[in-house]
Image 1 (tube, rainbow, N blue to C red):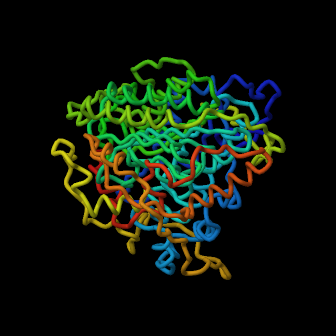
Image 2 (cartoon, helix red, strand yellow):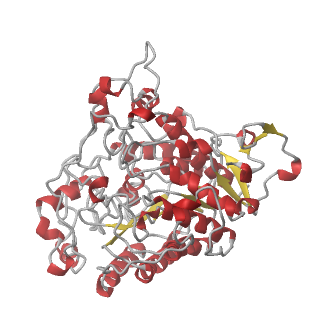
Image 3 (tube, rainbow, N blue to C red):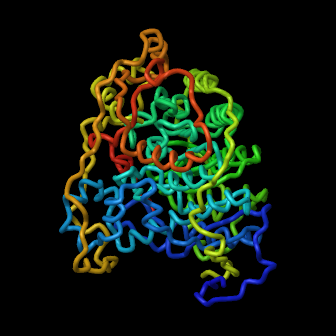
Length: 573
């Protein structure tokens, strides 16, 4: 049975069974009611605005609309540490003052507050992403959309950048059960550090991130961060400067992604469509229009590869809703009218009530020479990866759930870079900006440490309704032992180091540790469990550490890095 908007069960006729050539769309009204707290830039309410705008354009009539199931803690533990997941499941606003040490240990507080219904929020957005991956795996959909997902900063045992559970990593692990190779694409303005870190040492996932780089959260994503061990050259970072516009962005995106698809030949694509790269974003500094942003997604649909589309950042919420609605239409091949139809949130889109937005006149600091240098270096690295090998599938691991567990909503329209490298860059700021023209036009926050946790009320009194901690609940040990990075030799040759100091402003080279990070190790264990029955693993030429190009593995972000809210311009509404 499906659920109507009022919660009543209705019979689903066989005619409503999904067909392969349609797009799956996941939405749960409860996720839009989550509230991070007073003055916090992350507002899940944007998801409700997006959904109602989708309904007002009648796009739902061409979609298979599903309410995602809530993911289980054991699924989250496929990547995340069990004690971290357990803590998230039990902590409430009323009990957080009793667990400040663990709050600090798990990086919970100012950026990632404890709010009422936090774990249900995590279970819902994570469930939608895993559900979408399963529908692609089973061939029931060619494209799956979950705008509530895309929280790419969460680490193995640490919240980060408004993200608690990394649904992207979990969805990719699900896809790897059926697909030998997966490409992850991230057009959020912030570097997709959590996903890159998880797959930094494997060649079964290629991560490609287009992001602002230089004294900007999370501080990772250097051009030279290319992966390690079997994953060398399978991490692609595209560092950008302030003010990049549609033309400049697509001069990089299309040739780079064409080369990725040619050389890597993935079996599935995961696309993180963070909308904070739009012009006028509360935390952003790019100058993309909605059409320019959507052009990246439209381009990826031309490759006819199973596609999982997820949300991400975006803090001027009326523009987030505009963008994701327009991109939903692009996936359907519909060109939406600029004049918005009336909807429940029409007042948010005044005074213009139009779908498109105009870029500003801000300066584009990405010169043609800089863009050409970045593009050429990345294309050169991509040319070094070997052709896709033939790896037969044998015993495929079971899916996360069965198709019968999905709930179809019949009438939706009735719904009312590496921390070590970063340390070297901060210690040698001149090496980041060798030329005067490369310096970002932003005040330095090198000495500004991010607040680890907040003792204050993060949600506001009227939003605090969390239940008291149940007797007998435990939160695990107060301290954990995190594997440290070993010694290791300098792995970059003098020649390539010299070549890396052209106009891009590349960083001082750090030493590559011998040990894997906890996050990379967790993802490797999960991939190994999936890949064990698949036959021989895909190997790269050479031994890790023997060739140039590796800056470091990616341990958790240093607390001295800039906070994600350091660039908050404020909400004008």
